[in-house]
Image (cartoon, protein in one colour):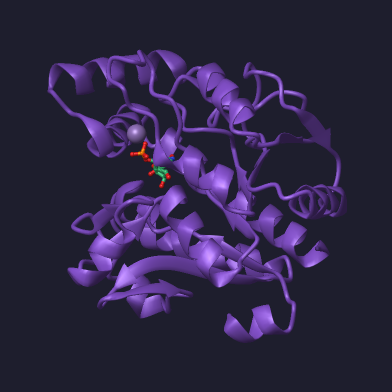
Length: 283
Ligand code: PSU
Ligand code: MN
């Protein structure tokens, strides 16, 4: 990975929160390894990020990645240093991974869905640290929009406030994670990987930070919203809060959709990794 950066080959960072907490074992590990394969197939070099044995590791090996299970600590931007000093196994969120990207000078990243403004804000007053980290890091993040359980229009507004370009991959609206359409407008539509790479480079040359590129899922699940609302109500009734909400809600969705959301989630993450690889290779 270090050689790749030095040689100017494109590197794509990948997070570990979705490996540890986004899927039941052993699916998380398979998704993580599948994402790495997708980046390589596109001609770029994957670097999966996590905290292990007292260090922020950029470019986890396969047996190291296997240690990121449900017992791992969820590590956002505020938590990296603490997790390293306390020698925790720390699964980095998008925001946590972006902090490592800044330190390692990595310019591209892929994930499933960015964090953002939770529904019902300001009760709870929950806005993901992903947004601030994205505004600060000169990294282009490919995702299928933001997490489906969030307030997507409010998140898009906040990204505008933070000066983060929200690009649409061959689409005019921000994808809704499982669903391809129905989201708020993007700030611009892009048609190919080279154009995305050129926009990112131009943004950085103007002193800009992160960019979000929303890629719609190829197979759109258009009937999931009522299930999301039921899962959120269940989380509320059981007093689930903060960082525990996403794993809980995803678990309910995966079970109650008969595995459809799990398959869709897996496919879209690997597709996003491939696209980020193509853009990194074109940069
Ligand atoms: N989207 C998913 N599954 C996930 C996440 C996003 O479909 O597990 C994770 C990502 O790691 C993201 C994090 O950075 O949730 C945001 O969590 P929070 O809202 O606690 O900041
Ligand atoms: Mn949150």
